[in-house]
Length: 181
Image 1 (cartoon, rainbow, N blue to C red):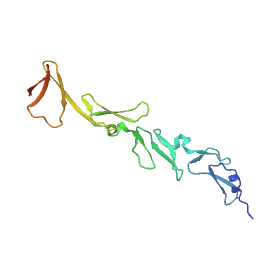
Image 2 (image 1 turned 30 degrees about the horizontal axis):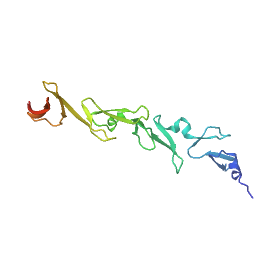
Image 3 (image 1 turned 60 degrees about the vertical axis):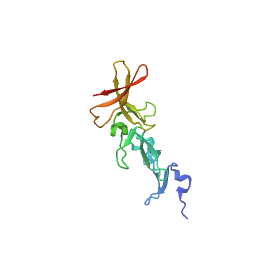
Image 4 (image 1 turned 120 degrees about the vertical axis):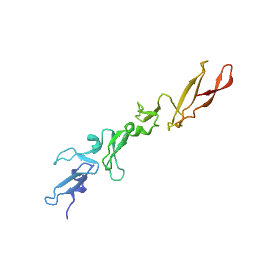
């Protein structure tokens, strides 16, 4: 009767290695399981989590983890980065460089200092009229009267009519109508 030495203490292989026998010599062969890499030698196999070796081959702006079923390496772009590659080649680019980070066209894209999440900030002359996390930048114009009272009203993307009536509030809190040309 043949005693399979792989059944005793995994044949001396590390727990993250599979034990088998060479077909010719019947010597024990230790082969690292999926998700592990041999950091030892041919005679002394040491299976190390692949994610701990050069980030598992993932891009610098990606995190390395393992598939729950197969234990294969999975590269996932970190917060603030977007995958522009095709599986399995993950390429992580700064989200702000891709379509302004999905921010409103009248907003600047930056990153939160702590989380690196995308932050959209309306540019000067625009106000956020959206509801978090959707930033919607609506433009404002400022008109002034001789008395120094200011009024802000929305900018329109379509050409304004040649004459527009605007109600201006002037002291002492009564309304006057002024035709603006």
